[in-house]
Length: 491
Image 1: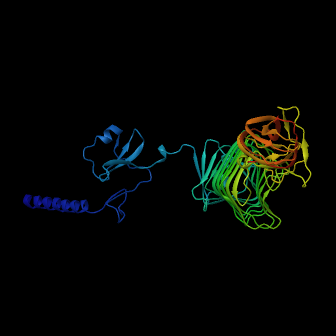
Image 2: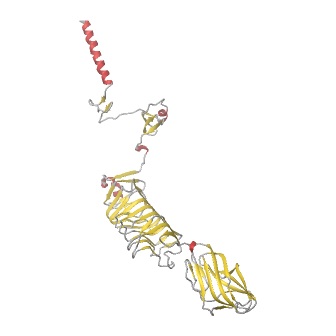
Image 3: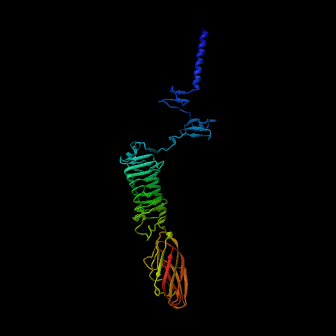
């Protein structure tokens, strides 16, 4: 009887052993009797979690020959790590613990009243006043029911073709502050993209964006700095006005021909302007760049490398200054312009000419008395080509009107009739009424009524409002001169 009992006990133990061994090589479920078919270990709980080994960085890096995929939690950096035997290194598993602390993602599926509740409250219930210390990311198409005030925040998308901010009516961006905008499509169907007055201290960085299908790109006014770079403007009814900006930088902006009205307009006072690259396709009645309000530039303005193209009818590539410019040109002397489609304008290409042109047998007499004294040639002069030069409201004068000091080449030729024999004459170029000695040319009359033709050439440095004239002097003898022609060019 005792033997039979022992056999039963042994049999039962063996049965338990085999069952247990079979489970060890199958699936294991903790907290569940039906582990997932794809898992070796399925842990289920609604009240507890799973703890991996926790250790310091020193302890983690001290593990000997860690296996590929070994997982630990580093208590120093508060992140999970797994070991990669290929790279022979511990790899951090990304987490928000070491990410941005001030970051907000706004997705197309979000309810704005929830995700931007704090910003709407800060904006008094009439606008979203962004947090100046937060980076906001737009994901997808966001249709706004209130305008945004940047408040010096950073607002970005990840793909300017897919991440969009749309405002049906009114202003998309408003307020008195600047900020940064990147990688977005902006649409204001029946309103303004911008209507911002920066109070003369704000900065706005606007780059890598698309502005499309808007009633008005809008107004950016009273800013310390506006930097606009790599922007596409497509299908907008009215363009943008920049007003009273201390530093305006426009880089590679693209205005397509399906825009209407005035693309870019400058109003008020600017410290410096630098518009580089990009293009303006101007057709019909459109205007590419409007300076007809005669904006004041306190320092310098550069317009270079922008391609002006298209076939306007009554429109224009440039709506020019109405004062301070020159015939056939668009800008005043504060501008340096070199673009395809419009005239080049800069101090470097300043030029002017004066001409005496009397009929044969007549001329203008200049009395050269006393001997040894230089006199300005008398006579009526005309000019045919003046750019950043004028005649200075007097004859025989070319006055420089550029804004920067530079060297000029002065060349000219005259024809005159001598009034006495054995007279030596000297011709000079004079700067501001003082002859330039290195420009002097000597001539000698051998008989009364000799016709002489001196050629004069020199280099002279001119600042704004400096002027040059042609002078003559009697070195010896008694003769005067009758000037019948004079042509002088400065460039």
